[in-house]
Image (cartoon, rainbow, N blue to C red):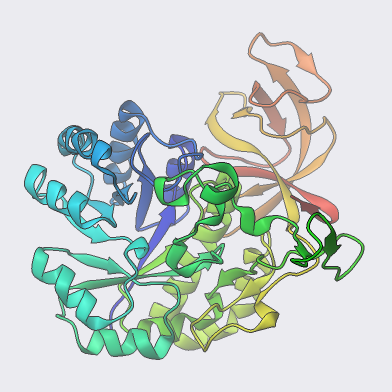
Length: 414
């Protein structure tokens, strides 16, 4: 039996540290160029060096995305980029383009090369092709069923790893090969600049009546005909392991630390419970499902794993997330008097009840006793995003704990 890696996304150094502390076996990040999330915060070379050092000190691997579909003008820059990455020694590069793959193989052959889902990896001959060229891992297309994945494992070399998305947003286009963003806005999804037009509201036009827009209405807010539910496979880890998957990948290189902590902690416990005792995994399923819904999500689906999705996998009446908790900040350090330091992310008040989310699975209720700024001035509230604050709580917090507030009712946000 293979014991799969838990692979978590990180949009920034702060989120990388969170992913590591909350249970990732590996994280994947993007530099400031040549990845498919140009609008994510991404990593400078300095932050990347610091992040790789932090992850490696905790026994966690780091993979760097370089998965654009390159044009001629990109190639010299990619070569220089790989030369710089060689000195940082990430554990792997995630690549989609065969030309980029060859550059990486020439410039930094000691760094593993993983083949991005963007390369449309849908059959075992494709996996064999990449293995013959020197790839260590192939990321499966999200359109594959569990049966197909199992067949791929049975027909590829044992040392070739399979990585599969198990959680997060689904793309309306085949393996992310979307042209809508480029057509509407000139921002190319395959160059890392997707504007996510699949989440927009649409109408239809009859060809003999140009300019007459007919709404597609499911309710008064319209219909979002391309808007998929989010993938969640927390209930199906035994099937993923049985299929021979080596790495369980979470989507979300534009997500917050709260999202990353929630998903990483939940899947970490589920994987560890199953490895310890499959019955323990089954008994704890209620906890996993409760915890995984604590971060923003668009309802859940199992995608293509158990057959082609039907209309039930779409959300036609909204493009919004379900939001049960608000992210307040990460504990960055502690003072001798027990106050904890945070860089504030959302407003909270003295006297308010919040939760301390801990990497070990505990959620501790706490009351905010006091708030002060770096100058020692007392404050009744923390209204300014990214303000550096010291707060006193009536429960014990520790470095890297997440502070969050439960909303009175589930909210939505665009």
